[in-house]
Amino acid sequence: MRMTMTKVKVRVKPLLWGMRQRLTRSRRGRVWGGALLCWLFLTLATPKIPYSPTHHVYADMRNFLGVPNTLNVFTNFPFLVVGVVGLVFCLQGSFFNISLTGEIVGWALFYAGISGVAFGSAYYHLRPDDDRVVWDTLPMMVAYASLFSSFLVERVGQRTGLCFLWVLLLISFLSAAYERTFNDLRLRMMFQLIPCIVIPFMTLLFPPKYTHSRYWLLAAGIYLLSKFEAVTDRKIYMANNYIISGHSLEHICLAMFPTLLTFMLSYRSVKFQRLGDLKENH
Image (tube, rainbow, N blue to C red; front, side, top):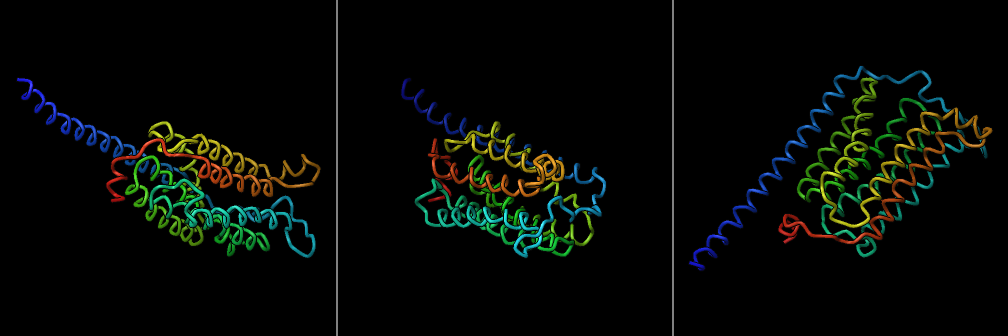
């Protein structure tokens, strides 16, 4: 009798595990479907957002040492430092705690995008206009796409994260082309806004694979602060007696965003391994 009961338990356990896996996949499918529907609804419900006549006019347009818009150009240098250092550490392999191939791809592209921001944004701010603005926005969108992919690899799984990486990179280029062709900022603004909402939400929904996960929330807060500084560009410039503008502070604040994530990658450790990730690695 005991042998029969033992055999039944052995058979039931895999069945229960399979049912849990199917329920988890079903819940994830509903989450992704709901997120996609929300993104489409917000995009379609929002009226067209063209460039304003003052879009390329910033509060601080001073010229030092013969460099136009000097501070808006020079404050991009921190992006280069953080981007190059992060990329080297990521490819070197032993400094960051990265356990999956999908994470290496995502984080390497993230730091490459941050490095590209330094050149693209500096090039744009030397002579801000509609033709150059794509070089300011596209590298950052590539960085956002790669960052969100890395987050998905960590929280959901390697296969899901890599699938989203290629989809989001495609959307990045399509958004930049759409913005330039139709003079409409909606896709780009939604693309930048959604991760700031989804990442904090998903930190609560999916358990962290690594320690130091609070850095994700701190980074999201830093990003929102930088957007506030950009919106209040002139007010900040006047408030500090014309020393530095809100837009220049936005650059410095945004550079803190990858810096925080670099510290996270350096100090974190694995809390648990997902079974799906172990199967994909072998």
